[in-house]
Image 1 (cartoon, rainbow, N blue to C red):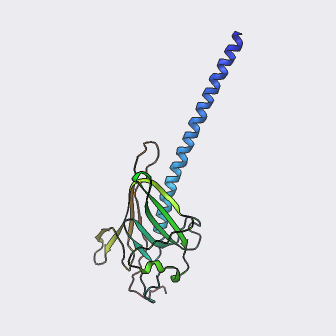
Image 2 (tube, one colour):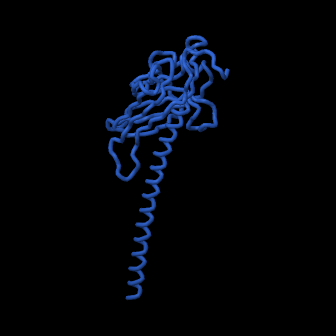
Image 3 (cartoon, rainbow, N blue to C red):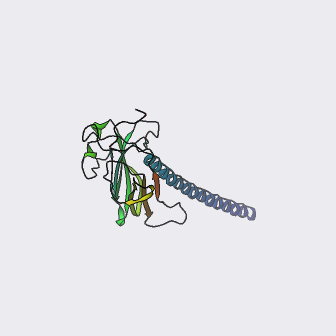
Length: 215
C-alpha cells in the first residue's frame, strides 16, 4: 500500500509538472507568434509605402496627376508590393483605412485590388479620397487608441532643409515621406507594442515634367 501510494504521488506530481510545462510552452509560442505578426505587419506596411510608384491617373489627359491621395484617416496609392504577391507580382491599388473598432478604439484596414492602368484609377480623380474597398480586406492592427497618417511636404526650393508634415495630401506630386502613428489602447508589457511607421517614398518624378532622359 505504501509503495502504491508513493508511485501514485510521484505520477501525479510528474503529470502536474508536464501539464504546467505544456501550458507555459503554449503561452510562449502564442506570444512569439503575435510578436512575429506585429513585426511582419510593420514590414508589410513599410514595403508597401516604399513601393509606391508615380502612376498617372488619366484624369486630365496625358499630363495627369500621380495616383496618390490621402488624409489623416485614409490613404490610396499604387504600389509594387502587395500582401498576396509580395514584390514579385503586378502593381496593386492599396488603400489604408482607419475604421472604428470595439470599445471606442480604432483599427487599421488594408484593401488591395489589381492596378490595370489609368482606367482603374477613377477614384483618384475626385478631390476627396474615395475608398472602394476589396473583397478580402486585411486587418493590420486592432484596438488602437489612435491611428493617424501624415505626409511630409518638402519645400522644392530648399530641398531637404525645408518642408513639414501635413494631415492631408491632394498635391499632383507625391510626398517624400509617409508616417503612420498608432498606439494600442491597452499596452501589454509582454507582447511587442504597435509602433509608428515612417517610410520614405523613393520617387523623384515631377508632375509637370513630360519627358525624362531615360525615356
